[in-house]
Image 1 (cartoon, rainbow, N blue to C red):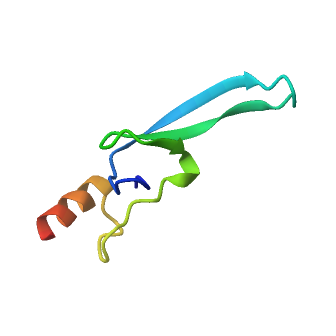
Image 2: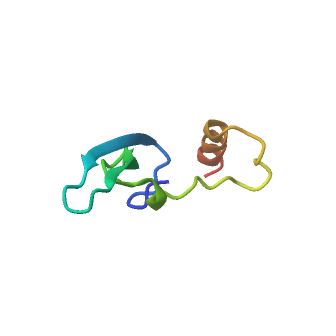
Length: 71
């Protein structure tokens, strides 16, 4: 989930800025972009989606639909 707005509509993005000239380490990894609010950040900052109790075996899309209907 997006840490800014709570949306579960996230897209994973890969980044690779190459090798840092000062340290020699490669600067690459994975991040996220929120399709609802436009926030971007590291993949670790995005929270896993909240799954309602009793819905653990369903797909995330099905859980989102069930959550919206019950709200």
